[in-house]
Image (tube, rainbow, N blue to C red; front, side):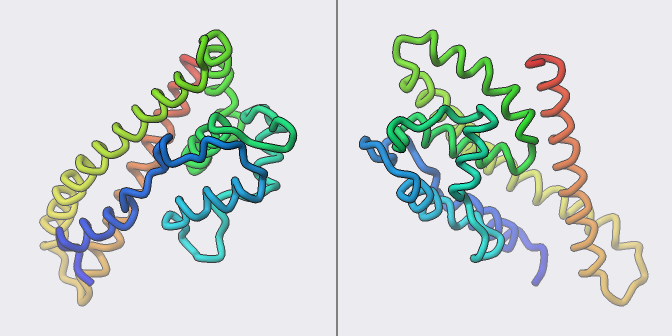
Length: 195
């Protein structure tokens, strides 16, 4: 396995897979918790690192409600607004703490309650998120290709038996460093703007 543009494109495509859950894909009827977890798992299951992992469990949903980052269900049923929030929570919890998500959602919930049609507002925000996410995948592919070429140039001076290993290790370190910087930036914005 080489860090070729084709390999990197295939990796990114496996993550994107255009399987985003669009608001129109969410049932218009309220769902029981088992139906919610099954639906989310079937639509976002491709993001699991290990097939045994869970995208969403009943315990997670209950904890989100207790933490006040998800409104309580109505008669043990979850509506489209709940579903959109659960998807956003899924993406955010990969990087942010529940406390940070709560900090972000407090003004969101206020805005949604102040709006005549909070669900429509949430759907618009969610659609914008999906559009930006799609655009970012294209940028990431271009940037990653450039960074890998840069790493290969830097390691060309190495006299080691396994240059491929060095390139892979440096690529992972670069990705981890970028993820850490972006996480810290997100936390700083939360601290400076939302708190």
